[in-house]
Every structure is written in C-alpha cells, then in structure tokens.
View 1 (cartoon, rainbow, N blue to C red):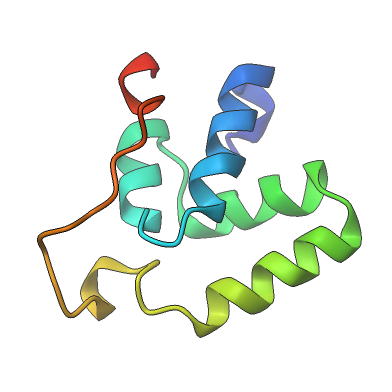
View 2 (cartoon, rainbow, N blue to C red; view 1 turned 180 degrees about the vertical axis):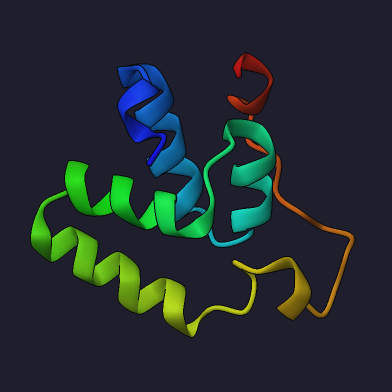
Length: 85
C-alpha cells in the first residue's frame, strides 16, 4: 500500500475528500494515486473505529462515490482546499 509515503497533511486531505459525498474515489486516485482499497485502509488506520464504521456505512449506500454509478457529470463539488494539493 502507498499510504506509508503520505505526509500528515495529505492524509488529512484524503480523509476529508473521502467524507465528501460528491468526491469520487476516482478523483482521489487521480490526485493522490490511492485506489479505493488504499483509501479504505487509510480511513481504517487513522480514524476511530466507530467513525470508520459510520463512514463505511455512508459510502456503501452512496452512488456518488463511484464515477460509473453517478447519474450526472455536472455539479461535482470542488473544495477550496483542492488547489493546495
């Protein structure tokens, strides 16, 4: 896994993007090179167990976290922090 090469600021940003409903795993992969499984591993490692479980429950129920499942292209949320990475 690539997570051991991430600095603290990058880990924080990956977690933030993973929590955002409209930010897809594909965008996280494009920006940081982390596949969905890597993002899950980062979330599991750096979050409390209860927070991780709550996040997994949310993500599993959302179609917006996967580009292929989305019913729209326009309207993707772009965080103001995105330009910093």
